[in-house]
Image 1 (cartoon, rainbow, N blue to C red):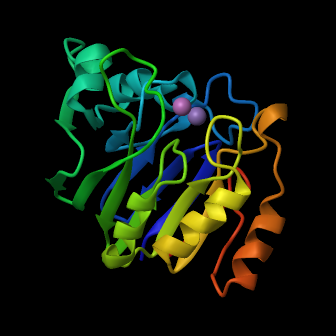
Image 2 (cartoon, helix red, strand yellow):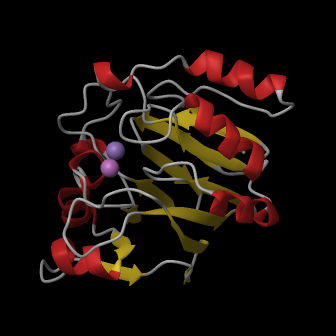
Length: 221
Ligand code: NI
Ligand code: MN
């Protein structure tokens, strides 16, 4: 059993009972945040890219909890190295093995927020499940590659403006064919207002399973 908790924007906690992973912990300054950074317990902090709405409170959470920071080698160098943090840095296409399972850096089409770094998504293998966190990205045909990963849950941005919007996210979901597709990165700010329920209805019309998680809500995979 893997518990997936949405904390707002693109921040999720993945917990298999042996390890807690937090992804893109943007809590301070996030009007939709369902937790304060001081409340977070984590063993691993994954960061997809250096924009403030993803990097967020990663350094502070890692400092306080002793969690391992997992990000690209370049973002590690730009932000995390030299601060006394535990860092596991990889790069696109590579799996990193952990006691809980493994995580792969999956490419994303997006700016990175730190010169010389790339933006990524992640595929997590934990508790017998696979979860794809897309990070911030445009629609890309590379997402077709994820069908063969047999993704149990795909976390896709639908906000538009900075990332793919709901129409392109629907096309992404059709390529990935995850057991469950969950929208993220919308309604945090006025210019990324979207209707998550309408997105889930559009998924259903294509025979795909979707679910809206409100900030603070969890589900079990
Ligand atoms: Ni971004
Ligand atoms: Mn973003």
